[in-house]
Length: 106
Image 1: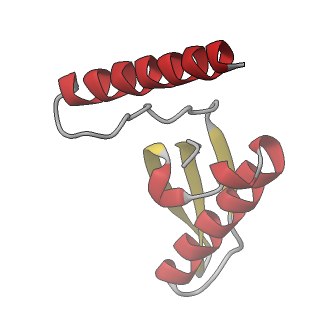
Image 2: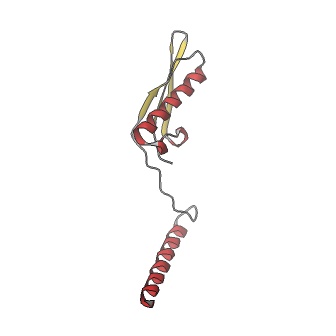
Image 3: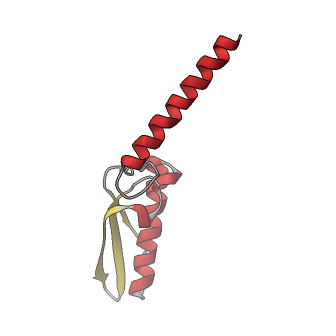
């Protein structure tokens, strides 16, 4: 019985020691950092609007909705996306925008 306790304590001490050594060796801090996983490019068109900024917001909202539908909730954050672009063009008196980006998990 004591043997199991000693072995469990040794394994736990070795595991925590290795993890802290690894974290200390990393540049930039004591935490483990894993780069975000990103998905394929998503393009989403927003609704037409007279006001350009409203059209941009609509495109970003559509992009977020599409990213969450395809990859899951954690991928639906515009600020976390890579390669963000919003392209707007005129359609008569209206403006329509298209948001393009690779969604990344938080």
